[in-house]
Amino acid sequence: MRRALLCFTLLSLFGTTVAYADVQDDAPEALLERLDYYHHFDRHEDVLDLLDRQSPVIRSVRGELLWRRARALVATVDLGTWEGSIERSRGIAMLEEAESYARDAMNLLPDRAEPYFWVAAAMGKRGELRGVLNSLFMASDIRDYAADALERDEEQAEVYYLLTQVYRQLPRWPVSFGNNDYAVSLARRSVALYEAIQDAGEAPVQYYDHYTQLAHALWERNSNVRQRNRWVDRAASDFEAAGSALERGFYFEGTLEIPQKTDRDEARAILDRVIRELSAIPDPRLRYRMDLAEARELRDSW
Image (cartoon, rainbow, N blue to C red; front, side, top):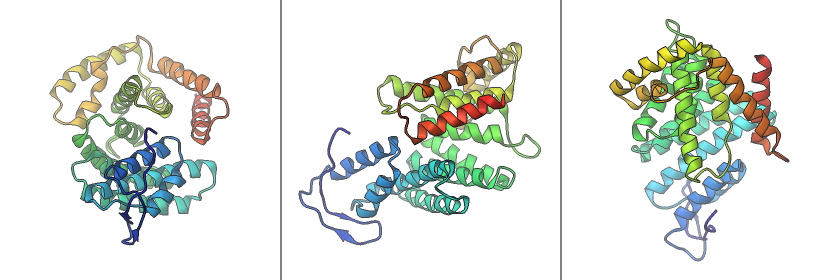
Protein backbone atom coordinates (compact mmCIF):
# COMPACT_ATOMS: atom_id res chain seq x y z
CA MET A 1 0.00 0.00 0.00
CA ARG A 2 1.76 3.10 -1.25
CA ARG A 3 -0.30 5.71 0.52
CA ALA A 4 -2.19 5.83 3.78
CA LEU A 5 -5.92 6.33 3.67
CA LEU A 6 -6.58 9.98 4.49
CA CYS A 7 -9.64 11.17 6.41
CA PHE A 8 -12.28 12.95 4.38
CA THR A 9 -16.01 13.77 4.21
CA LEU A 10 -18.10 11.24 2.31
CA LEU A 11 -21.70 10.25 1.85
CA SER A 12 -22.44 6.67 2.84
CA LEU A 13 -24.00 4.23 0.40
CA PHE A 14 -27.17 4.44 2.50
CA GLY A 15 -27.49 8.19 2.30
CA THR A 16 -26.08 9.27 5.66
CA THR A 17 -23.21 11.74 6.00
CA VAL A 18 -20.03 10.89 7.87
CA ALA A 19 -17.60 13.70 8.69
CA TYR A 20 -13.85 13.30 8.78
CA ALA A 21 -11.08 15.83 9.25
CA ASP A 22 -8.31 16.68 6.78
CA VAL A 23 -10.37 16.32 3.60
CA GLN A 24 -8.14 15.95 0.53
CA ASP A 25 -8.91 15.62 -3.17
CA ASP A 26 -7.13 12.27 -3.55
CA ALA A 27 -8.98 10.58 -0.69
CA PRO A 28 -11.33 8.53 -2.92
CA GLU A 29 -8.36 7.13 -4.86
CA ALA A 30 -6.61 6.27 -1.60
CA LEU A 31 -9.77 4.49 -0.42
CA LEU A 32 -9.86 2.39 -3.60
CA GLU A 33 -6.20 1.48 -3.17
CA ARG A 34 -6.83 0.35 0.38
CA LEU A 35 -9.83 -1.75 -0.69
CA ASP A 36 -7.79 -3.46 -3.41
CA TYR A 37 -4.96 -4.11 -0.97
CA TYR A 38 -7.38 -5.75 1.46
CA HIS A 39 -8.83 -7.86 -1.37
CA HIS A 40 -5.47 -9.28 -2.48
CA PHE A 41 -4.77 -10.44 1.06
CA ASP A 42 -8.30 -11.83 1.60
CA ARG A 43 -9.22 -9.26 4.24
CA HIS A 44 -12.78 -9.19 2.95
CA GLU A 45 -14.39 -8.35 6.29
CA ASP A 46 -12.19 -5.25 6.39
CA VAL A 47 -13.39 -4.35 2.89
CA LEU A 48 -17.03 -4.62 3.90
CA ASP A 49 -16.46 -2.76 7.17
CA LEU A 50 -14.74 0.11 5.35
CA LEU A 51 -17.50 0.27 2.75
CA ASP A 52 -20.14 0.37 5.48
CA ARG A 53 -18.51 3.48 6.92
CA GLN A 54 -17.49 5.45 3.86
CA SER A 55 -18.52 6.33 0.33
CA PRO A 56 -17.36 9.11 -1.97
CA VAL A 57 -19.66 11.85 -3.18
CA ILE A 58 -18.78 11.57 -6.84
CA ARG A 59 -20.85 9.24 -8.97
CA SER A 60 -18.02 7.34 -10.69
CA VAL A 61 -16.31 6.41 -7.43
CA ARG A 62 -19.59 5.25 -5.94
CA GLY A 63 -19.75 2.73 -8.77
CA GLU A 64 -16.18 1.68 -8.00
CA LEU A 65 -17.19 0.98 -4.41
CA LEU A 66 -20.26 -0.98 -5.40
CA TRP A 67 -18.42 -3.52 -7.55
CA ARG A 68 -15.74 -3.85 -4.89
CA ARG A 69 -18.46 -4.63 -2.35
CA ALA A 70 -19.75 -7.32 -4.72
CA ARG A 71 -16.21 -8.67 -5.09
CA ALA A 72 -15.75 -8.85 -1.32
CA LEU A 73 -19.02 -10.74 -0.86
CA VAL A 74 -18.21 -13.28 -3.60
CA ALA A 75 -14.74 -13.87 -2.14
CA THR A 76 -16.13 -14.18 1.38
CA VAL A 77 -18.59 -16.84 0.23
CA ASP A 78 -15.90 -18.65 -1.76
CA LEU A 79 -13.61 -18.97 1.26
CA GLY A 80 -16.35 -19.34 3.87
CA THR A 81 -18.25 -22.16 2.18
CA TRP A 82 -15.01 -24.09 1.67
CA GLU A 83 -13.95 -23.53 5.28
CA GLY A 84 -17.42 -24.40 6.56
CA SER A 85 -18.06 -21.08 8.30
CA ILE A 86 -20.82 -20.11 5.83
CA GLU A 87 -23.75 -22.43 5.19
CA ARG A 88 -24.92 -23.00 1.63
CA SER A 89 -28.24 -21.14 2.05
CA ARG A 90 -26.55 -18.11 3.60
CA GLY A 91 -23.90 -18.17 0.89
CA ILE A 92 -26.55 -18.11 -1.84
CA ALA A 93 -28.25 -15.13 -0.17
CA MET A 94 -24.93 -13.27 0.05
CA LEU A 95 -24.26 -13.96 -3.62
CA GLU A 96 -27.67 -12.57 -4.57
CA GLU A 97 -26.75 -9.44 -2.61
CA ALA A 98 -23.40 -9.28 -4.39
CA GLU A 99 -25.09 -9.55 -7.77
CA SER A 100 -27.41 -6.66 -6.85
CA TYR A 101 -24.45 -4.44 -5.94
CA ALA A 102 -22.64 -5.36 -9.15
CA ARG A 103 -25.73 -4.54 -11.23
CA ASP A 104 -25.97 -1.14 -9.54
CA ALA A 105 -22.30 -0.57 -10.37
CA MET A 106 -22.97 -1.64 -13.95
CA ASN A 107 -25.59 1.08 -14.28
CA LEU A 108 -23.18 3.69 -12.90
CA LEU A 109 -20.15 2.46 -14.86
CA PRO A 110 -21.54 1.07 -18.13
CA ASP A 111 -18.14 1.22 -19.85
CA ARG A 112 -16.17 -0.60 -17.16
CA ALA A 113 -15.53 -4.35 -17.32
CA GLU A 114 -15.49 -5.08 -13.58
CA PRO A 115 -19.20 -4.63 -12.78
CA TYR A 116 -20.19 -7.01 -15.60
CA PHE A 117 -17.64 -9.55 -14.45
CA TRP A 118 -18.80 -9.50 -10.84
CA VAL A 119 -22.41 -10.00 -11.92
CA ALA A 120 -21.20 -13.09 -13.81
CA ALA A 121 -18.98 -14.24 -10.93
CA ALA A 122 -21.78 -13.93 -8.35
CA MET A 123 -24.13 -15.89 -10.61
CA GLY A 124 -21.46 -18.49 -11.31
CA LYS A 125 -20.68 -19.09 -7.65
CA ARG A 126 -24.41 -19.29 -6.90
CA GLY A 127 -24.73 -21.88 -9.65
CA GLU A 128 -21.83 -23.84 -8.17
CA LEU A 129 -23.52 -23.95 -4.76
CA ARG A 130 -26.79 -25.10 -6.31
CA GLY A 131 -25.10 -27.65 -8.57
CA VAL A 132 -24.36 -27.42 -12.28
CA LEU A 133 -27.37 -29.43 -13.44
CA ASN A 134 -29.68 -27.33 -11.26
CA SER A 135 -28.25 -24.13 -12.70
CA LEU A 136 -28.14 -24.75 -16.45
CA PHE A 137 -30.70 -21.99 -16.97
CA MET A 138 -28.13 -19.47 -15.66
CA ALA A 139 -25.28 -20.56 -17.92
CA SER A 140 -26.00 -18.37 -20.92
CA ASP A 141 -26.43 -15.29 -18.72
CA ILE A 142 -23.10 -15.96 -16.99
CA ARG A 143 -21.42 -16.33 -20.38
CA ASP A 144 -23.05 -13.18 -21.75
CA TYR A 145 -22.11 -10.96 -18.81
CA ALA A 146 -18.54 -12.29 -18.97
CA ALA A 147 -18.48 -11.58 -22.71
CA ASP A 148 -19.75 -8.04 -22.01
CA ALA A 149 -16.84 -7.59 -19.59
CA LEU A 150 -14.35 -8.71 -22.25
CA GLU A 151 -15.79 -6.30 -24.81
CA ARG A 152 -14.93 -3.51 -22.36
CA ASP A 153 -11.51 -4.87 -21.39
CA GLU A 154 -10.12 -7.86 -23.25
CA GLU A 155 -7.23 -8.31 -20.80
CA GLN A 156 -9.13 -9.32 -17.67
CA ALA A 157 -7.53 -12.58 -16.50
CA GLU A 158 -10.33 -13.29 -14.03
CA VAL A 159 -12.95 -13.30 -16.78
CA TYR A 160 -11.16 -16.05 -18.70
CA TYR A 161 -10.68 -17.93 -15.42
CA LEU A 162 -14.46 -17.89 -14.86
CA LEU A 163 -15.25 -18.82 -18.45
CA THR A 164 -12.81 -21.74 -18.26
CA GLN A 165 -14.95 -23.27 -15.53
CA VAL A 166 -18.19 -22.57 -17.39
CA TYR A 167 -17.07 -24.27 -20.61
CA ARG A 168 -15.41 -27.16 -18.76
CA GLN A 169 -18.27 -27.96 -16.38
CA LEU A 170 -21.24 -27.59 -18.70
CA PRO A 171 -22.57 -30.53 -20.72
CA ARG A 172 -21.85 -30.39 -24.43
CA TRP A 173 -24.37 -29.74 -27.18
CA PRO A 174 -27.28 -30.50 -27.43
CA VAL A 175 -27.77 -30.20 -23.66
CA SER A 176 -25.69 -27.03 -23.27
CA PHE A 177 -22.65 -25.27 -24.74
CA GLY A 178 -19.77 -26.91 -22.87
CA ASN A 179 -16.60 -27.28 -24.93
CA ASN A 180 -13.28 -28.74 -23.75
CA ASP A 181 -11.19 -27.11 -26.49
CA TYR A 182 -12.59 -23.70 -25.57
CA ALA A 183 -12.03 -24.38 -21.87
CA VAL A 184 -8.34 -25.12 -22.41
CA SER A 185 -7.85 -22.09 -24.64
CA LEU A 186 -9.62 -19.78 -22.18
CA ALA A 187 -7.49 -21.18 -19.36
CA ARG A 188 -4.28 -20.55 -21.32
CA ARG A 189 -5.42 -16.97 -21.90
CA SER A 190 -6.10 -16.57 -18.18
CA VAL A 191 -2.62 -17.83 -17.30
CA ALA A 192 -0.92 -15.71 -19.97
CA LEU A 193 -2.58 -12.53 -18.72
CA TYR A 194 -1.83 -13.36 -15.09
CA GLU A 195 1.82 -14.01 -15.88
CA ALA A 196 2.01 -10.69 -17.75
CA ILE A 197 0.75 -8.96 -14.60
CA GLN A 198 3.34 -10.86 -12.57
CA ASP A 199 6.16 -9.92 -14.96
CA ALA A 200 5.13 -6.27 -14.72
CA GLY A 201 5.34 -6.46 -10.92
CA GLU A 202 1.62 -5.69 -10.57
CA ALA A 203 0.55 -8.89 -8.78
CA PRO A 204 0.92 -8.31 -5.03
CA VAL A 205 0.34 -11.99 -4.24
CA GLN A 206 0.73 -15.29 -6.07
CA TYR A 207 -2.46 -16.78 -7.47
CA TYR A 208 -2.33 -20.51 -8.12
CA ASP A 209 -5.91 -21.29 -9.13
CA HIS A 210 -5.36 -20.10 -12.73
CA TYR A 211 -2.91 -22.98 -13.12
CA THR A 212 -5.15 -25.50 -11.37
CA GLN A 213 -8.00 -24.61 -13.73
CA LEU A 214 -5.71 -25.02 -16.75
CA ALA A 215 -4.60 -28.43 -15.48
CA HIS A 216 -8.22 -29.45 -14.87
CA ALA A 217 -9.29 -28.34 -18.36
CA LEU A 218 -6.37 -30.20 -19.98
CA TRP A 219 -7.18 -33.39 -18.09
CA GLU A 220 -10.83 -33.25 -19.13
CA ARG A 221 -9.95 -32.62 -22.79
CA ASN A 222 -7.49 -35.54 -22.83
CA SER A 223 -6.04 -34.96 -26.32
CA ASN A 224 -2.94 -36.72 -27.59
CA VAL A 225 -0.07 -34.85 -29.26
CA ARG A 226 -1.47 -35.20 -32.78
CA GLN A 227 -4.92 -34.02 -31.71
CA ARG A 228 -3.43 -31.07 -29.85
CA ASN A 229 -1.39 -29.94 -32.85
CA ARG A 230 -4.32 -30.34 -35.21
CA TRP A 231 -6.52 -28.20 -32.93
CA VAL A 232 -3.82 -25.52 -32.59
CA ASP A 233 -3.47 -25.29 -36.38
CA ARG A 234 -7.22 -24.84 -36.77
CA ALA A 235 -7.42 -22.40 -33.84
CA ALA A 236 -4.69 -20.22 -35.35
CA SER A 237 -6.82 -19.42 -38.40
CA ASP A 238 -10.02 -19.13 -36.36
CA PHE A 239 -8.30 -16.66 -34.02
CA GLU A 240 -7.50 -14.37 -36.95
CA ALA A 241 -11.11 -14.55 -38.15
CA ALA A 242 -12.69 -14.10 -34.70
CA GLY A 243 -15.15 -11.24 -34.44
CA SER A 244 -15.30 -10.78 -30.66
CA ALA A 245 -13.11 -10.90 -27.58
CA LEU A 246 -14.87 -14.07 -26.44
CA GLU A 247 -14.18 -15.81 -29.74
CA ARG A 248 -10.53 -14.79 -29.57
CA GLY A 249 -10.50 -16.42 -26.14
CA PHE A 250 -11.91 -19.62 -27.65
CA TYR A 251 -9.01 -19.80 -30.12
CA PHE A 252 -6.20 -18.22 -28.11
CA GLU A 253 -4.36 -21.56 -27.97
CA GLY A 254 -3.74 -21.15 -31.69
CA THR A 255 -1.39 -18.24 -30.95
CA LEU A 256 0.93 -20.36 -28.77
CA GLU A 257 3.67 -22.91 -29.15
CA ILE A 258 2.38 -25.61 -26.84
CA PRO A 259 4.52 -28.40 -25.34
CA GLN A 260 4.80 -31.53 -27.47
CA LYS A 261 3.16 -33.80 -24.92
CA THR A 262 -0.33 -35.10 -24.21
CA ASP A 263 -2.91 -33.02 -22.38
CA ARG A 264 -2.75 -35.28 -19.36
CA ASP A 265 1.04 -35.25 -19.20
CA GLU A 266 0.98 -31.45 -19.24
CA ALA A 267 -1.84 -31.39 -16.67
CA ARG A 268 0.14 -33.59 -14.26
CA ALA A 269 3.24 -31.42 -14.61
CA ILE A 270 1.29 -28.21 -13.95
CA LEU A 271 -0.57 -29.57 -10.95
CA ASP A 272 2.53 -31.17 -9.44
CA ARG A 273 4.25 -27.76 -9.57
CA VAL A 274 1.25 -26.06 -7.95
CA ILE A 275 1.20 -28.62 -5.13
CA ARG A 276 4.96 -28.43 -4.65
CA GLU A 277 5.00 -24.62 -4.42
CA LEU A 278 1.94 -24.36 -2.18
CA SER A 279 3.29 -27.07 0.14
CA ALA A 280 6.47 -25.06 0.62
CA ILE A 281 4.70 -21.92 1.89
CA PRO A 282 5.24 -21.50 5.66
CA ASP A 283 2.11 -20.67 7.66
CA PRO A 284 -0.16 -20.38 4.58
CA ARG A 285 -3.23 -18.15 4.73
CA LEU A 286 -6.71 -19.54 4.16
CA ARG A 287 -6.75 -19.10 0.38
CA TYR A 288 -3.49 -20.97 -0.03
CA ARG A 289 -4.77 -23.77 2.20
CA MET A 290 -7.90 -23.98 0.05
CA ASP A 291 -5.88 -23.91 -3.20
CA LEU A 292 -3.60 -26.67 -1.93
CA ALA A 293 -6.47 -28.85 -0.75
CA GLU A 294 -8.29 -28.46 -4.07
CA ALA A 295 -5.14 -29.17 -6.08
CA ARG A 296 -4.41 -32.30 -4.04
CA GLU A 297 -8.01 -33.49 -4.33
CA LEU A 298 -7.91 -33.03 -8.08
CA ARG A 299 -4.55 -34.79 -8.39
CA ASP A 300 -5.76 -37.70 -6.25
CA SER A 301 -8.82 -38.09 -8.50
CA TRP A 302 -6.51 -38.77 -11.46
